[in-house]
Image: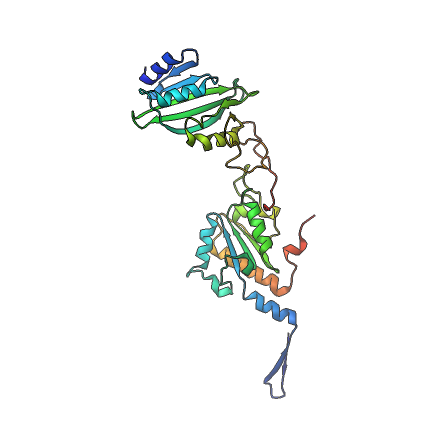
Length: 158
Length: 166
């Protein structure tokens, strides 16, 4: 197993649900309750130093429960390593704490995940749609979004 | 129009109506506003270029200000976020104005049958001439301009006069 995942399991034994390193890609599935602590540890620990949040996105596993998943892709410029952190969220309560205090650049990724999947990031400074417009109804990357649904057309902004 | 001739056969003067004189002037001085959002815009550039030379039809002066244009040439995909911008530009154009919808995307959404693309610009503005194809070739644009000239020449009602279609 990898250094990163070993340290993570050692530090958060109750929160890491499972880990794997398929094809050399370190992945950890964690619980959402202490996600900010976990991410801060990954950023600040001298063995980790994941200073670059490359991506955050959502996944919709329609028909499974928990339905949604938030995926963090982190990279360490110092150690030249990557890690993926995954969190599963229930459909009835798709809320997770924001990672903006940890990496300010993750702001827009979280807005995109809200826009497309309806995942709520608790404590986000400006959680509003980023790709679509405010009058848009629904979250189009959810798998149960009707393909032929038409949206309201908006007039010129005053 | 009638041409009167003198006794020796030389033409004297012509009788016409003021409307047809104005229409004749309008017909050969169309100012297109090119609203190019996608690949169709490249075909428009081709039509204005040396090989096809849309200038031959009097549609020479492309204006990128709606206040100086009378033909709106919508070339490319219009999505829901772009729709209000297009509508505002159309509203700012001076009367009388005509609209050409170019290509499958502008006419009907094309193959973008999805949540972001407006399924045809005729949902928001009156279209006079549709150019089918993906992409239409420059001959199609020339054909559309000639059709607009026909509308002006014959005094046929513009789409804006039949708008909105109930």
